[in-house]
Amino acid sequence: MKIVLLGAPGAGKGTHAQYLSDKYDLPHISTGDIFRANLKEGTPLGQKAKAYMDRGELVPDELTVDLVLDRLTRPDCEKGFILDGFPRNLSQADALTEALWEKGQAIDCALHFTISQDVILARMSGRRVCPSCGASYNVNGMPPKKEGICDRCGSAVIQREDDKPETVLKRLEVYREQTEPIVAYYREMGREIPVDSAASIEEVRRRLDQILEGENGCQSEI
Ligand code: AP5
Image (cartoon, rainbow, N blue to C red):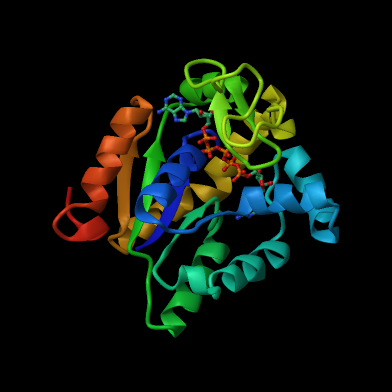
């Protein structure tokens, strides 16, 4: 299964990508996580990406597209993948479609997490992430078992730099202007499947399983 996750910042892409990756044994490829890992390691890519991420803007395509397309050529992507945070504008979407098309492949489904801005702002203010392994928590409803400590690897969890309210508003503006048009792009390809992500995590998971395990896999009509 080749899956793209669409949705505004804070819509739940990372949370559900982690679930789907574990359940269906597919690599979870998050461009945000890749940039943050590079930043942590002090690579030139991380340094360049930081300025854009801190402002809530998109990292330029020339730093992003080849990175993802190259990642998709690794052996673990042969059985499929979950793309979280890519594509994020129409030129990235075109580049992905073309790269897959050259291999006789296509995206199977674009799961579109829908949610209101008020819920997003509430969730983002409570989000905490693990800087070591990338696990995501929320102080309101999904905290780590031991306060402030990652369940998975034991590191101290932190608030993301770009989760400050003013940066979140900028990210939402960038989403509306540059990323939202991709929803129509995949809808026209017959691949967009909306998922109400204001529901509880358990309910969203149930819905995702229903979609992915439907008679025709994720291309099923729902
Ligand atoms: P990225 O890391 O991709 O951030 P994003 O898309 O803004 O998404 P988020 O990670 O903020 O949210 P999410 O949808 O994953 O929500 P989550 O599951 O954590 O990108 C960061 C930056 O990198 C960008 O701004 C850009 O600069 C750059 N970048 C990345 N990709 C790029 C690209 N392709 N091109 C150019 N630049 C790029 O959930 C949020 C919170 O809500 C969590 O605390 C979670 O626990 C909670 N939650 C989730 N679902 C539920 C639920 N159902 N009920 C209750 N709580 C819930």
